[in-house]
Length: 372
Image (cartoon, rainbow, N blue to C red; front, top):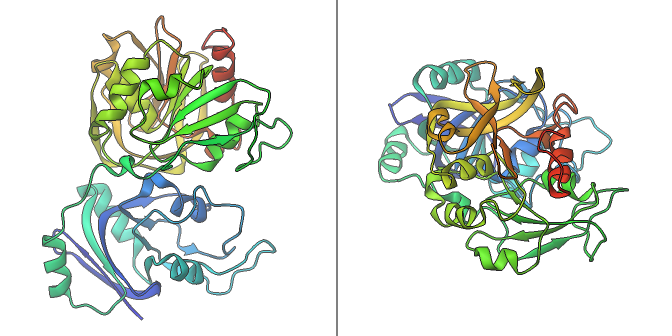
């Protein structure tokens, strides 16, 4: 099966196809992680994107039943240098080729992913076509020119109905149900990862997950002790309803935001965000915590960042910065019980460098200091 990738500027990459026989149009991005491809592909924040992996061999440990971050693959396509059709891992239930077929996602391998990465790094993320159906470059060009990329996938990447998860300090089991006995955390879902819910429930908190479109009154109706704003795909400025809900709840509940949730908090405060040239995606991003004078290796996946100047005069204090480019990685309000980080503490690449942030959230709910 032949594979084709055509970029908006006319650059053509040809390789071999795997996964589904399909053609998709999306935003081409790169991820520098050496492992974790199953979690990456099932992260809702990648909805609408075609992922180019910098690590050259993907699929060698197969696909398990426990590593998904959502109900299925959200990325629109997958690009690798090479793949393993015969994985070796006791937990593997299928190969990545079989998985992409089952999920109806196209993949292209035997491509110089270093060259692809350098192009994105130098010129920025770009619209592209990925195809394993044998279409011609001319057909791909017509499809590319006739497709407009969405920037508001956060509106439908998450849950479609209110869902309940019981706190379980012993196991933190994802998908459990019941009333539980802990604090109650309301989550506004822009495309949440399973590990975030696990990180909250394993601390004994009951979770009520609300879909995009829920109102502030809906959230307050369950009498939550705290509010969490989740990660998600797309341009945060397009999440107009979510921003308004966050604005209405500003200061009414102890609030923690991760990734898009971090950006939503900034926008709700009256700040602004901007798109990065090629974003931050991978498990090796250094972040400096200004208030503890410590650094951490973090997992990241985002295209947008908070404009520092736009929030510092809106009551926010910058608490974390990116050690590569100095962008805002965390902030807290001077007076209100609100804080956020741009990266993913539940991703645990450190492996546990940033887990303390969930403990801070619990302490904040209980009336403690955000720096506890």
